[in-house]
Image (tube, rainbow, N blue to C red; front, side, top):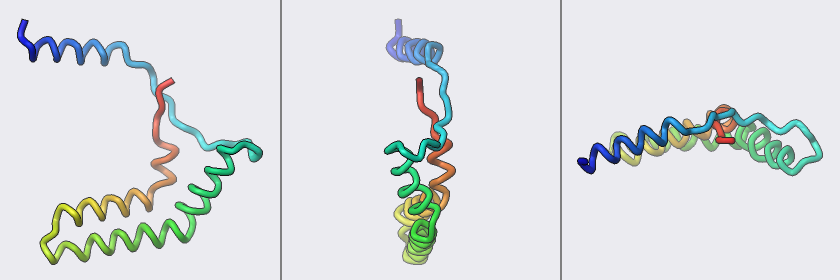
Length: 98
């Protein structure tokens, strides 16, 4: 059997036995460590003024690299700033395998 065919068959077999994915929800118990961490990092940090200003500054910094011809670092920086600006959506949108 060809090595490429064997690798393809194994990859398809792994895909068939994959578990289901569930979205992560924000913690609701105010006494748990997860809720305190989520509150400070996501709600007050990333969704607050600090996260908005940091994300906006990173996007502007990346855009300022474009005229200098640094396209790859500029693209990475702009995408990183966008990730920071949309971090609350990304955090709750991640799925985890159970």
